Length: 307
Image (cartoon, rainbow, N blue to C red; front, side, top):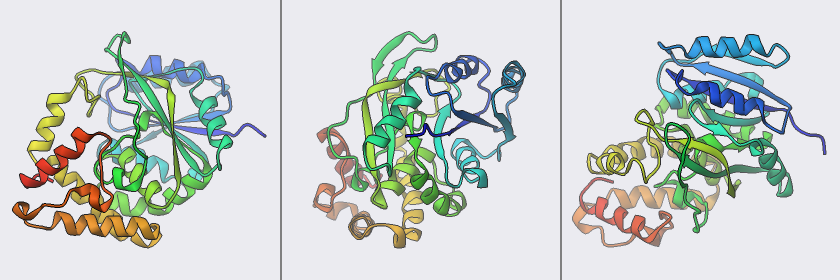
């Protein structure tokens, strides 16, 4: 089968400290047929200088630098994905501060083709410190990658995602809704939307990315940013994110599967109950996190009115 051309979407903002290593790792991919789109969201450091030097150094490569919307990471990625050249294309998301392993793109294509071809690919990551020293590994999730999980947990790391054309085309039709609502995370929106529409998820147990942990991570790993994540939950920021996601999903309900629509509206009804009357576990309506502890946390947050 002919090796596909992959459009790598890299969004940047003040990533000058790390972006050189990421650009070199893209150049070192064993899958050689790619175009690199870089959308900068208003860098004030040397990010643009680094990118421009890379472009000049590799005139044989199709590398395009565009200006982002200046509205944050999720909007930057989605605005880039909305470009008409990418409506039906192979797409891979890339973060500015990671390092890809050489097999990342080739393995993603191979695993998608081994399946139905209409699947989204993501993988585990190796967590590193800012100097790329390994400090751990992302979880090897055991529960199904399904819409009921996606409603309350984002487990598809955007920096590992690869999309085949069928999925990219579907997502392109949903982008206006997501952009208008200002959804909080592009990868969480992808996870919710594609599972809601019935696409399959491949989650590769073999890591493909060195996921750098540092003070400027938007979220980072559960292990290195646990306190930050707990504060998000207790301040009801998480509940606000879910509110925005549910508004978009409600608008998109006609393109969801019948089962996904049932789970979606059951979850909306469940959240609307007075906190003291919430007796049913969310698992009873098909909504769950990847661990028993996570399921328990959902019930606690519900009791506290933070979900």
